[in-house]
Length: 80
Image (cartoon, rainbow, N blue to C red; front, side, top):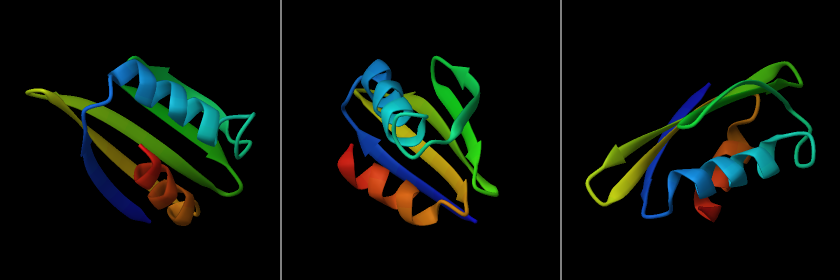
């Protein structure tokens, strides 16, 4: 299991949209099992990816926890 964080200036809605596109059924094919305005959880392939977005001044902090999808979680953070 891995826990990663990254700061970005991108809006919350864009981060959530990119997460859905990357991890969801049209991307890696994971099932979205929980979704909120600032969070999301995707499951499949014996693991999961959980995303939490927090506001911090002019930036957003994106926290990702992943099991069995560590490589893809790192790749997603590099892209945002």
